Length: 325
Image (cartoon, rainbow, N blue to C red; front, side):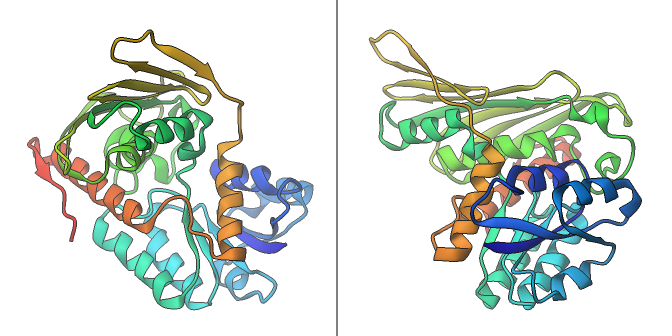
């Protein structure tokens, strides 16, 4: 059993704990860190872990074998480097960093220390997305020509200030939160992104923002893409891949439709899974066995670079090439 600490016990830090605690055969949390301990004391007691306020104390605890970060983006690189320097595997919530250079610094620290690194791109573990990846990889719909994606959620209506409402921490409207999952899906399915042309349309600033973010995508392969996210609308997930032999669409967490040229579209529904729990278990397996984490570091860097270019494009009002150096 891997004894771990979680740093940051906001909404998503709590989600990480509840996805694993008492359920995983490989992972359990024995320490948590929060700058507002009184607000999470009952949660810590319910889930059976110690609570403190200092990051350094948790990292230096000899009982802690792995550290999970659910902290603001601006802290990620320094915290990842500190955990790696302590010789401990580290999981980080997305975005890893707001630039490719910073993301590379974090990954390089883990590589140098020889510790496992995981990133919380749990939407890859939707049942629908795992099946879509297989359909694309095995050539069922031929060569990828175009991909469209939208992830919209209402979580912004539950945010009351803090770093999620700070444009320095969360630029690009909904792109930093929901949109990053779509960028990751695109890279996973169609490879590195070469060029983007993005826009942000804001009708109401935070708190309780109303905005739409959209981007036209050119992949290095020559394929194209279109992604969007709308903050404050009800939950919606759709990734649609068009190929030379057909198309395939993942809708929500469990539904996949595949249409080959000349055939009637076939819709399948797959069992619901806790996508976060699946990815956490995969990270624990990487720590124990050395098995590669499902999200490669190359993909992490390509996503960071594409995200950085999208934010620059929104700011400049013009297309931007993705830096892959």
